[in-house]
Length: 328
Ligand code: MEV
Image (cartoon, rainbow, N blue to C red):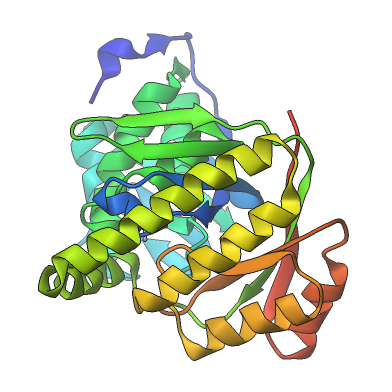
């Protein structure tokens, strides 16, 4: 923990509020774990947290959850209530910050459907960190937020590439490439606003599991998988250019190509394919799964109005919403 890098702003608040958005990946998920570049953007919905001194006498930090795929109270107690991974994340929070966080209550309200590849755990991590620092009246740099968020993301996802918490802590649209010890991160400025329809299938089995299963498949045919990752790298590079030039038809075409590779990597499902086809039939410029796959969400890029596709997803019985990447 880098408290030395935190500047004390004096005081602290009775209650502090924080927010972090969810994310979508436009190109390069999974391949990014192996060093290929990827493109990600923040969603215009996220996790809100209110931090205050805990009212109960149970040692905390106490997380009061709503919308994390779980409603109730969670504490860093190995045998306590709530999902084990959340209890472990709170234990890690105590390791990172020390006993002072045991006095806190974190009221979480998440508008990001959990387990759908939309970055709910990374948003929770970033929002908790921002909220705790704000409560204690401490400035925290975005580098320190990212460092702490990675420590929490490791609890949720094992050994993540880092793309989720990076885009969520920086905001906007980014190019992300994992290097041996660090990452190359660049902001991308879209020339045109990009509108997406998002359709949700059931929750996936977990990012950690999806990444591990792919690693095991890849180890049996290393050369072939390297070929696929190289193809995805080229998609990301061409997409970056198309986004900055406002060539949305090309971005959509590249999303479709990326989806073909994701299917080849066996992280797509018949339901995700069905939603992609539905979106393309309804006029989407392109559609692909986003995140770890094996369930979760599909994003469909449209020229202007995402409503017909959002409605088509809803009519077919899938939760859906619209989101967009703004120009800067
Ligand atoms: C998950 O949002 C993205 C993956 O590429 C995993 C990772 O990058 O750590 C599947």
